[in-house]
Amino acid sequence: MQTERKREAGAATTTHGHEARAAPTAAPPQPPPGSPAEDRFLNVLVTPKITFSMSRKPQWRMPSDIPQDDLRQAFLARFPVRFDPAKLLFRPANPSLELKGKHDLRLVYRIGSDESDDERVLLTILRELDKAYSAKYESMLEEARSDLLSSSMTFQVVADEIRSGQQAAEKKWGGEVRQLKEQMSTNQKRLFLLEQEKEQLQKTVSSAEGETTQLRRSVASLAGENAALKQQQSLLEAQVAALRDLVSSRLEANAAGGGAERRVVPMVSTPTQTSSDSDEAARLEMAQWQQQLSKMSEWLRTGARLLEQPPNGLKQQITEHASGDVPYSRASVGAGHYSES
Image (cartoon, rainbow, N blue to C red; front, side, top):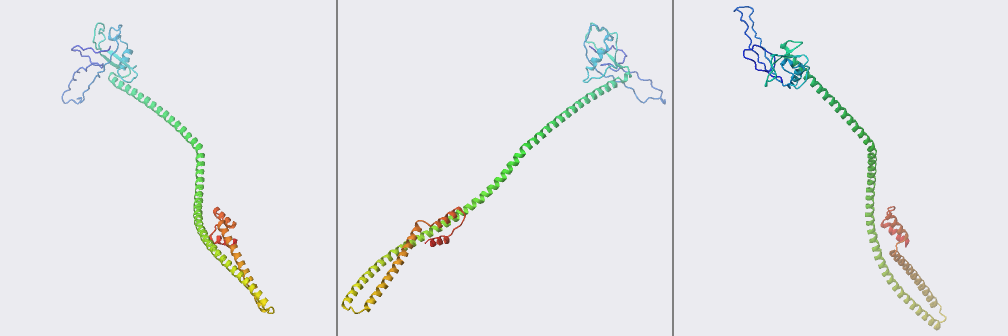
């Protein structure tokens, strides 16, 4: 263990070792006043106090027995960084000091160098420390740079992988998205056409409902007319029956009167001719009335059939109108009715 021993009083040795106090130097002789060689500066030497410990070995009897390598290694352990201590020399201030049997000794060494003066040893140590710190920081910087480059390369690799994955996904899903867009466009067009067709169907249904309402009104009016015609027909039939009875009675009366006259005045021919002309006129009038009645009866029966079941032409028009091919109107219905009748 390297220590510094208390120096004896009166010792005048000045060292650069650790824990060594700078001995007071004798004042330089003052030159006589007015001397041109008067020195204006004072030289001051400061010894740094640097302590370190080392393991004691039994073969060490005096400070000079301690190897320089052990001293250098123990001295380097005092600093956080390593530097080359091969140029340093440790000279004991008291080489004859006995190490055995003494405790709490402090050995004093002067640090020297083979290549520089003793006064520049501290500067040499500081320079070595600066080099060591510079090398340490350079190595740390190089390590950080390598880590940064590695991270950058890793990031670049990851970015390339992500980019390639995005491109693959874009190729994979681009076609499907395009197909979906086309399908959506087609569906929108179909929906638009369906909406138009729906509007047309709604218009057709509304117009068909209106025309159906008009047709129902027309059928109702025709039913009323048919009822009136039936009533007129019944009245006409009653009148025809009465007229037939009247004509029959007149014919019978004329026949009876003509026979009596023929029996009374057989030579008169004028009344016979007159009675035959009147009979012929009555028969012609009766035939005309019967013909008109038969035509009216046929017309009424036709109207009744039309009311019960519409004709084929009207059915076809209604069917075509329901399918939306040919529109129909009340005029067309009337035309078909009267043409069928």
